[in-house]
Length: 478
Image (tube, rainbow, N blue to C red; front, side, top):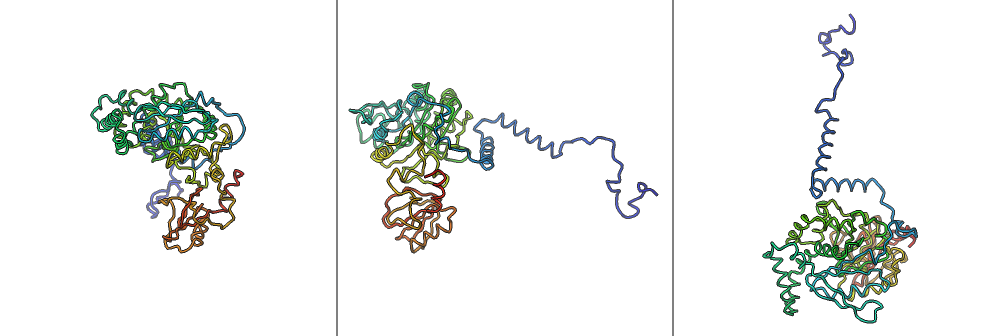
């Protein structure tokens, strides 16, 4: 009996093995349900949805966000060496002609605007500055190097939004609040006007972003860059000019300090927002979408988030490549993390008073506006303090705080009885710790992943992770 004639069932070995079965002459075909076909169909569905879904659809934003995170994980961070070398810029600018600064203020904070203007260096390259607010008026200021006071007009961005886009919403509570403020200002009732600003000025602020950019584009349509800043935002001109001249304004660009999750990732207004001409032209040109978003501003809490929504509808995402360049804190309290010691620094924010703005202007006045970009690691030098990498190992500062206000992102340990014990907690976490601060009265030890220039803090002892700070500073020759 040949092998092919064996009755396998009779000998108790089950059906004939596949390797001994005669091969079928029919060609195998990929049938529906097979893995390759399923993957192909899934990919086709994803591509179809990607093509058909609006830019601001949650599914599309989730795919975009995760693809970006994956790319960041797999690829090395782009080099920023160009910010410090002497090579010609890729996209040269005449800053006075090509850049517009839009300073956002309000009736209740208008005293900050003269300080903002007076903090500019004498060699400032900013020529066109447009101030927007919730009322019309003028501000007087002492320009650096000018023999007498100068005047700058303030444009009513909220009134513009109401007149041009919100005629059908005259009864909305936010419109009525604007009218109450306008009436108090018209009657010269300063106390009532300031009371209104304290009560609902923040609501009117959300209405300034879109209308301010719209007014700016109408008045200055040929600018290559539009910088939108708060009245307590300081711009470091040499750093900013390096960045703008590295990027092509003919492409839609939206830059700033990122806040929020993937569904509404937006640039923090206080840290400063940079928009290319292409981005602003696309925004202002979308008349139907812009009208709907002006209506949305009546209920929006944050105008900078609304601006991001408007841009997302048009396919313009926040570019986070240069996120570290924009900062939402004042210089002495700016959190210098490990990846920022050698990174360029273009803005500061949240000054407690107009005099604090003038003070930072004096500290940074000697920076050549066409010079090298300022890096985070030079903040100590700008404040006349020894740099952390110049401090002897183990030396702590009594009555000083290198950490700053505690929050949920730092490690706080209770029952710590001495500064030396707090320092050891930092040393045990040397790969994560940048600075530590011990509160003697409370027995609390704060360990942070950043360090600051710091400020006087009676009753505290503080120090930095000196070996780590030295290694980081050596990377850029500080």
